Image (tube, rainbow, N blue to C red; front, side, top):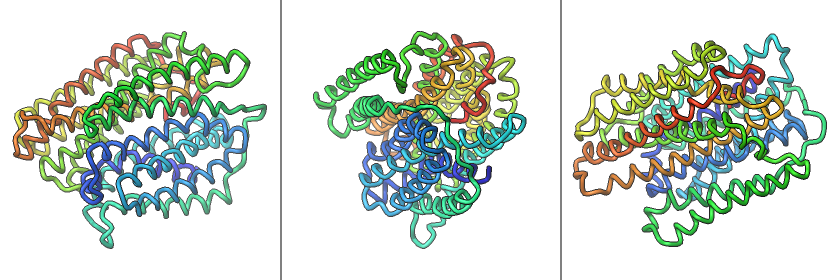
Length: 468
């Protein structure tokens, strides 16, 4: 359990720790605004792309073996990120790091399920959830502390070097104590489907992120249309794979299940808003209000604390009131973003406590909704489709995060260059954040509408799926 928790902490930490260091990364590597977006989005996109395929490879070739290899690759990629000479190199290496995480995370759930009796499994997944909360708190604080400390003159690069001792300890222990397990039976990998889906998503996101730097040329729009066409081709290919008895990444039959399609929409909107928010907030707090990376982490801390306070209650009550909790959480997040808009819309510099109060409210909403969303969706999916649906939903949450960074990050950076903003930094970046907040509120409200089509209670037959 200690081994998989080490690895899970490291993976989850890398989702949040980079956002606090983003301004320093941009200054050191002379990264463009689009490259800064890709530094975060490349990781989440690659992580999502690897989840389903990684789970099936572990089922077929051994979860222990795949876990250790993926963990080693994650450590190597982390070291390479720490030595990245350019922004382009960092983006590519972050994608490798995310792909390694995408292969590693499914093995964590498989190892827990195969190593613990049913009576102890709930406690094991509870420990995993606690580590999620710890990583959420530690990410902004640790990232801020490391950047400000500037250990050995490494600056932001220490946020990647810190992964190495954690990975080495997990590898040393894991090679000794982890049991090997497989799913049994025949597992066929839908490699073509995985490539088609990843290529389609990249083609859609690339012009959205790079369009401003490119000047919105016609061929950028052509790439976007090509990506949408390729998504249609991916669905058609998956139908053929399912028709001949294969194991597609996305079973087309799931698209006819209303709770599942509503869950896909809710996941994209909910996690898209969430992922983009921390990137633009971190840039605003540091470049706009002049806060240090450590002070930025302290501002974000109430958000993580709020989510930890409500996450346990949300999980405990999901079996009785899952949909109510989701709707309440999403509406609470919308209210939090509306309060932030009121704080920054006049171009002033809000104090710590007003910002902390709005963020704490958002954290309360996040804790109610995020841990149970996938399991509530699964309650409306036929049992024989639950495993496949859980994998697809977990993947979509990551892709939704990358899409949110692409779209709302572009709204933020476009607003920084509009005449409505002044040369005064708080007003300039406050204007950018104020432009994003209404979109954030709209995303959570639309997610709420999608959640109304979900089952009233959560599924209980697939513990841990929501954690992915």
